[in-house]
Image 1 (tube, rainbow, N blue to C red):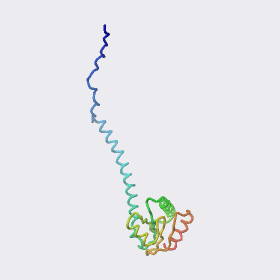
Image 2: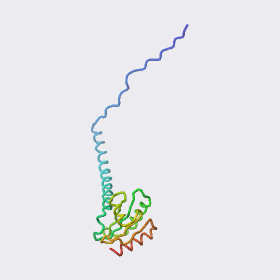
Image 3: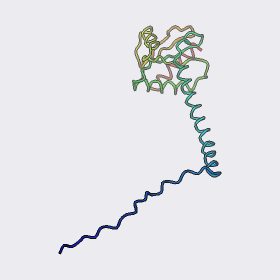
Image 4: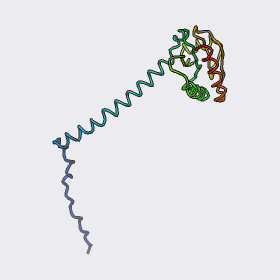
Length: 163
């Protein structure tokens, strides 16, 4: 005689309860208001600083300010060049000691047509600072990066002479 196998007990084929619909009651409304109250200042502050950085970057790339009566330091810059970034950091560090508004620090990005034209006109390549007097005449060229002391001396001599 054949042994009969017992059939497994039938499973309950009812679908599991779906997640309860989110109830938007008073507590839910307060939670949303709290999250919005936290998010708005955070997003606003981040936007403000982001806008300031973009605005400063645009201002630094405005080469039309050369020759407006203030001495200028123009970095010939390639954004893909590590040495250019090092020179830019060094220059910014040195320029912190000087009063804003007494000179221009500008960036001639050689990835743009204006930057390429400026570099060609002054006969220089990237990783270079072009020092200009208030009339826009080239007074010196500093090829970098240099030691902090050498860069500081070159910039001090330029700004003290033409400020």
